[in-house]
Length: 293
Image (tube, rainbow, N blue to C red; front, side):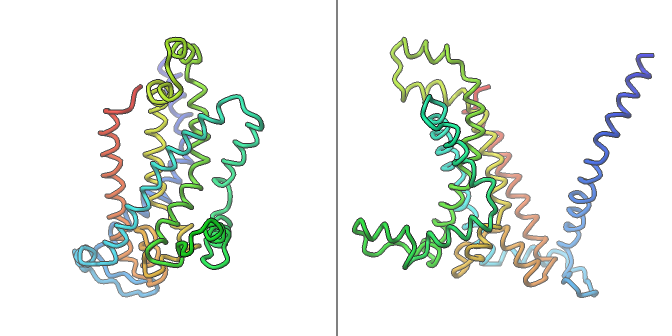
């Protein structure tokens, strides 16, 4: 009787997860296997002739200067993740206190994350406008005669993209940290205050270690999300000027849908997958040193 009940429960479980697993199979596993096959071909979109080229696409990638430039830009883009996590944590700590308009401020900080990426890009393009934008207008007003060109120059464009991405991610990180801070024992904090702990010590020695699992989660998911994203860059600079903001995900998109070189685009996308896998593995190993469960 018990075995029959367990089998019915298992069948019911398979029925519930069936639609999701079908979606994973149709939209993830099969396309991934197909793209792996394209790595070894010269497949061009709308071209019926497909030849097997072996490892030519991999050799091409390893000698492609733009691939290495995109890899460098991707690393610079990833630097925005820990900055957004740190700022999100500090804002969460402040908004976790008894302050006026706390709920409104939480909503305002989170709003960029749920705003359309195209709208975000358009607003920041206006803010970063080098001659008439409000940011450079403010910098000139405080005495900076030659403010940065932001999105319009090769030296500052990636830095400007990082600022946009930090602003975009910070609200999400703040909300997750606020949830984690609710689990920090108020009795523990009060005991530390009675023992003479200063606010900075509370933050470094008690609060930060207790929310370190949340920090690890945000670091892993933030890195993966940042590596895969390209919408904001495509909307603001389209990889320019001079490929200074072309990251690997955007380079995949350009090869696939601008040049229709599906074989080479698949090669770069699999290289991107390997990079994500390595970064995640390093984080998973390194978290043993600083994450406290």
